[in-house]
Image (cartoon, rainbow, N blue to C red; front, side, top):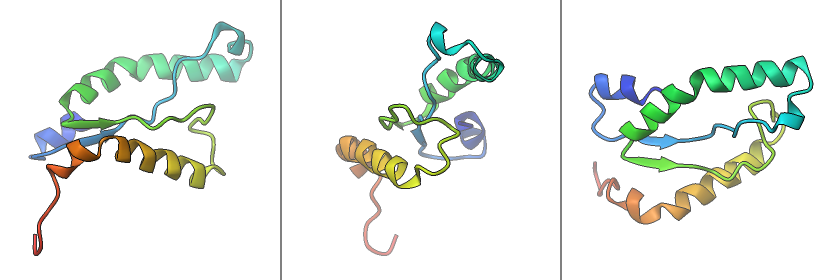
Length: 101
């Protein structure tokens, strides 16, 4: 989530979608894949937090058990995204463009 880059490029408004997955439980760290995934998540967690603070609105879809590897779950993930946006409708309305904008 490069909100810092968007700000640097002159973005006036940043609407971020926090689609990260939570850290794994200890029981899920029994394989090399689980450990590598956790290591990657930990390495980027600080940067993600910093960039979320730069956003004007942060949408956090309820992803449940879905992960970055849930390639076939597109429809369900889209529904989760729409639900997160609906939950922030009043915040998002301030950025609504009028006719002809």
